[in-house]
Image (cartoon, rainbow, N blue to C red; front, side, top):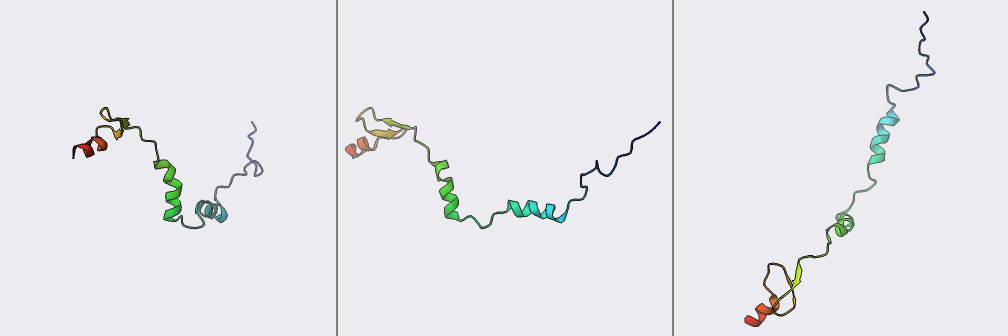
Length: 79
């Protein structure tokens, strides 16, 4: 009965990572400079701008108003 022993040529996996492997993960993942508040807000600006879906026409005067709010045009006529 013969058993095949693994040779060094088939075992190419490194059990101990090199120093370059360890530091390469940290160095590659970090940004070169800090992102300023302005750049961050400019990038995120399109995320917050959405079309308003709660604008309707006032049944009394026909001007635009927000849902569940009094019409400003009708209120100015009353005052």
